[in-house]
Image (tube, rainbow, N blue to C red):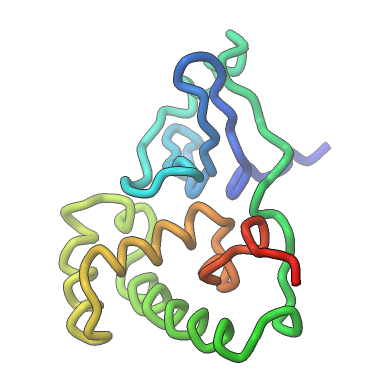
Length: 158
């Protein structure tokens, strides 16, 4: 039986530090993972040892979370022209950054920093804005519609 890939899966931490993190990357040796808290407004992916994740699961402090709050697939037909335009502009910034630095280097501040500055100069936006786009992309499932301003979970019904 083939093991299901864990990339993009959610981990739910229990107890005092309850939070949900998305697995962004796991090395080929299955030793290190980078994860991001899906609810934080600031901050970056964090590095974890796979052995620590497994130990926390065994102790019942961590579980694979199956309910993804960003799991709804949004079709372009559900979006206004303005939402599509904004999403495409943001996706252009994210694609630019992703095309210039690979994983896991993108998760490391010292390696990521110069590329972020390059993006600010190319797109005439601030460093915090580039990071906000990257964070949303990572937190919401790593696809272009993750960059919609008001993600479906938060959208008001008409």
